[in-house]
Image (tube, rainbow, N blue to C red; front, top):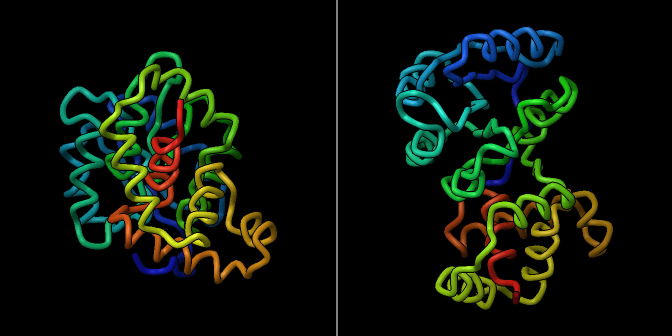
Length: 225
């Protein structure tokens, strides 16, 4: 995976949600940020590819539950495209039990639908800049809520992935798994932010992963009960 380049301005956003009021609300909300531009809105995951071809968004805000193609499958298909946009999953925490499936499909993170406007704007900026969205506290809550049972095969696969890494790469991977940003990892491991990005890029290549959120899930899967 190539290192993240500087995001273009404005950051172009596509909204995929089958609720017209949600699309309108998000569009109005994002208009308040001078560096963000909502380029299109669609009501079904199946319409996302055509919208990407037409408008070239940098980020897709993707609802999970839509009446046609759901956000998980739409995300999985997007990750098969060359140079796909980042995907942020929109979810209601208490009702949606598919967040981790979506992250494994290649989403860069998730937002709760009641996230304050400044939080949504910040999340869009962060995924374009290559930074994680999942905070350690929210990650722990989601793991407890969505993953009551570990899968032995997935745990074994995750441990094999980490075993292929060098000691320094494992240190970086564990820090990513704890939801730490590049600057924090750099300070704790006494290296530059550019060096951290280089390590993450090599780790993702070795592990055949799309992004750091998937790496965080691998780190979680490898942990003992």
